[in-house]
Length: 232
Image: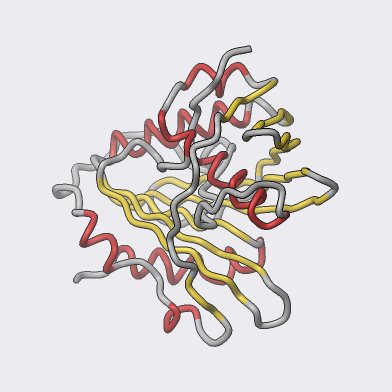
């Protein structure tokens, strides 16, 4: 078994769960950022798109508290210590080999992220990540990661001394944008069990990833996509 630096698509979610369950002193922002699933729509030619947006432009298109409504508080970004992360039982993820496994995000230069806590009825979380690159690179990168994770319906991830049992289940993705991916991730660690929904939509040269409590993801996906596509 070798140390794997796979992708933050799964590991961002792992660090979120570790923080929520108190199983680790890591303080990665809660951006459980996508997951394994074959896209609901893939194939055909990818239309040409304008130049990728800058990270500053993407930041302007992230959801904020006023977009989400009453009861949402933005989580401040904090620095997480770099525990060694190892994937056990999923060779496809180990083979990906990306520094993104340490929580730095997908391998796209232009990116922005925000995470929120919702306390309307119980403490739940929702996060958004935006990426911009060529449509072809976004499609290939996201598809490769999701396919790898889908190949492993169950596996383990270790972070420091913590072992997280993970499960993946394909979820129906809404027919939005040009390509769609969605799934449910289940996490078990230290006697705690969590479920995170992660849905990714590619629209032209922008990739929108909304993750967190399933109900919150479903409630805010449309507005996240609309704002991501809006003019400055």
